[in-house]
Amino acid sequence: MSLDRTLHFVFRNFATLFLLVALVTVPLHVGRAFAFRQVISVREIHPAIAELPPNRLVRNVGASDLDTSRKALLAVIVVELMLIPLMAGAVRRVALSEAAGRLPSVADAWGHSLGAWRRAVPRAGPATVVAGLVLALAVGALAWRIGMIVTEPVGGTVAFVAVGMVEAVSAALAAPFFLAPLALFARSAKGGDPGAPRLTGEGPIA
Image (cartoon, rainbow, N blue to C red; front, side, top):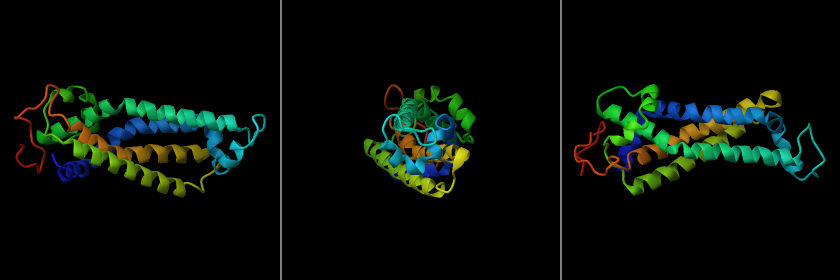
């Protein structure tokens, strides 16, 4: 399955793919942001706080708090990476539902995310997976940068909501571009299957 056909699949089902990823990213990132809301409330002076001695605080935030917040964000990212096979399975279910003429849904995708790996789908090649990863990184970085600029005026105790949502939405916007080719990379759990269903708009499968 070529990159352009994979992208057609992504854009046809983007709302569903976005929502199924957002169900993971929003609780994780907003929860982390809430836990470190004091750190986020002074995000404009983080470089200055990072240079302070260990016993100096600014609005009850010190250099050690910045380090702990960064480690918590890293932990969230690790959890998301560990969930990639499950999310890719949900995307694969969306592809199967579309191929069967059913309307894909988030609930159905998550409910059959594991079983979807036992079903055959049109195959995406390694180059498509790599291209999807590059595109996802570019989309995520751009969305995060724009979001952070937009949320700069948001301060005080509600800043964590804006920052958490920007992180979560950026990931949910980017992930489908990588998850789709990854989900379609293998025809089935046991290898190739010449009887694999075709996606809408898909030509003959080699």
